Image 1 (cartoon, rainbow, N blue to C red):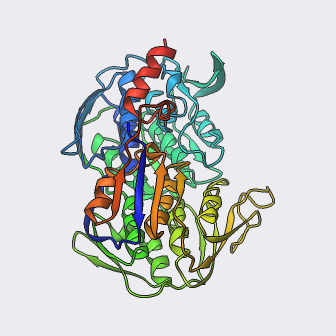
Image 2 (spheres, rainbow, N blue to C red):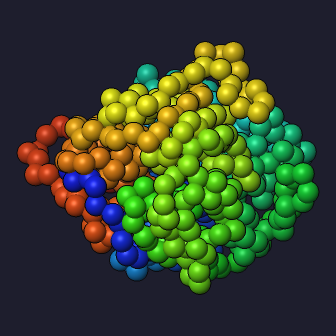
Length: 468
């Protein structure tokens, strides 16, 4: 699989692009579909590697999958649970295996064995909140080591029972795990201080179609009623607000104009407000949002990431790159992940005037206060990026680097495509469609991609070697 491409910067992006379905929605709903033995039909399914990995995980359990990648349609059904042991070769592939605990605990009394949490390297991702939520419902969750690999064992000897779950922090995946487990727990489950991101609302809409009585109340409270009878479902996956914002920022930063089909104002309110504050142009139209350069960008912005409806942490990296083109100083305070500003070191090497701080440069101290994490950033602009060679470290930093390459005059070589392929459907082709000068580099067959579990063939090869 090709992994390196080159970008000739300084070309305005112009035209129209369609965003795909949301990675953070479809992957969760595939896990949720295993609550029942009824067929589920999904449309607007993105052709990305994180969906490939999730499909492979679900097939290990017993799901039958028919995926038309070209049309973005998928039919799935899990008539029976054939295997409750997710192979350890999926450790680090993505974070979906952890949701198998919530999805399967109520459907089988067999122990659920899942590998440790994976995904991008943006800081530790403990599952303490997941464990607390599942134990509140009567599950037993243990951490064990198998063949020098970490795994979690979850089982429910007496069955799950509804309970009140108070999450210490509105974690997205802990909320989702609690929701899935609550669907088959006896009685009613109440999840307080829950995450309420648009992707979770889409999951709730899917579950309601499936037959679950579920709703969101005030003060981040979600109610889930025990469900015994399920229905066949047709569901269109909501569009990816992260991809939509990414193209919008790239259009403005290259001094271009792009209509982003599928971008939804309701899911991007906080982002659009910040964009307007720095003089980023946009116009909400039927079927999407048009983003355009309307003059010099203004700094002086203070931005703090937060859980929804706050500023999404996955918007932060490309927004920082956009702020390097704004006149004046701006401040960014990352409050969701402690290690999400590491990409700034590469931006400095490319010419950006940015400085990292361990202090909370925000309106209030966050969870990382006085813990020596570089989680605040000051940006001075405008600065000009220097072309060179970039190695992508993770998905969202990857698009930030692509933006920097689009802004830089000259040719920048970017390696690590597999990270971008986790969440951006046909990104190279879409950028070419908008007029960017970007192309693949010819590479000899090498071991560069051997560690990449996102590639389906890599998963199958590794599983055949290391899993029983």
